[in-house]
Length: 579
Image 1 (cartoon, helix red, strand yellow):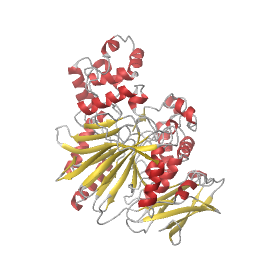
Image 2 (image 1 turned 30 degrees about the vertical axis):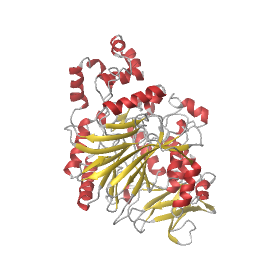
Image 3 (image 1 turned 60 degrees about the vertical axis):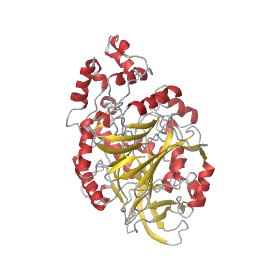
Image 4 (image 1 turned 90 degrees about the vertical axis):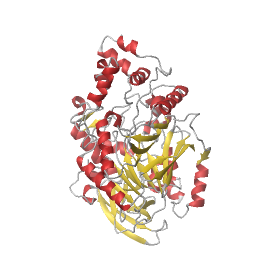
């Protein structure tokens, strides 16, 4: 959330300038622009190509073909975009049972390599993609693009396009909400979608396997998506909207069993479609055997420089969310608010991550410490910082909601008031409550358990790269006892709007709310809910930078980019510090 006090603008950078940067400094590593453009017009391979889920000797290659019956699709991998020398090749049979998607695991590759790949079906050739394996040994730098929350109806995925053309990016970390499940019946984004011609397909909320497949297919026709996936290898985890809004192990806020059937069936359909349409390893391709598709977390080691470990927080352990509306009448004074925070939000044994993930993460962190890697990075679906809502009423920003809430005569009337953003934010701020109970703030026991796990592994110095919130964040983290727990950079949406803006607050009010977070919430250093974009995080041996890259618009494909803030961070003994 850019503010006059904190924004550090570096000026506008046009798409043409970005292209020129690639042509000058990174021509040997980047794909030919003609190969990127071909993805948008290829009728057989119209969903493009993608690579992802790499290790030091292999990488997943993906595409989807337009076909009417079972067909064999060939793939080739080379060390140059001219394909003068074929290093690896193979064939994959696909059919309607897998929605004509194609995934190949290219193995036996050298570590730290850059490769080019393509697919063939008959005489048709796919666009060319670029893929990388993880490096081993000494590594000086690593550039990661942090992305999250790409919502088709809200706008074009221009930030993906900018990532494709960013010469500082080595890999893309997508922390979830890669698709959204909503249908046209919701008002959220409907007017924008109609205005720019990006209404969801299918038009209804997606529930069945066919629905999820159609939605994934639609998202992979976006030009920015096509370009990013062709250019960069993806590290991914999911959040909620890949299945439904705010899921937990027994259901979801946006799932109604009476009309939408069994939750387990819907969840299985969403997970199956995700694996079909994303460049991620199947369980049988993993080193650890016996895992299910739902157990979707990964550890990526980048030589002697960094560990990146992703999380799964939705389908394998999450306890049901606490709903403020269920407890609003219980909170009448400071004492009852503290009791709610202690006994309801803070109740023990309300997990977010599974025991198997805890074990894998603990082992990976300990190994990273032993190997002397300076950075341990968590790919986090949700912001972990303590985002307590400021007391907007006391600060004179929002009116006091208490008289209106006290006058409510029914649960229905109370519910309508709770849906009013001004009332809701002011009420949470009055009692010092977390902004959202679906994020880590709604699971303080789980957050402390996570911090304890990292500290016990000798790694209480993490860098969190987080999504979900539709806002940029720089957070300085601490546990409940005030001990440092690391730092966090959160990304705005690729196209999803910031919550204050989408809640109806005007730009001036949204900026004031942003400033209040940064000035009055201890862990928040800076935040911005005014833009869409991504975060470019560059790691050196002892220092790094996080650049918050905003796109000028998502309502048109004609856009510019600007770095609205840049934060430095450093390794200082056993700590990671900002500045």
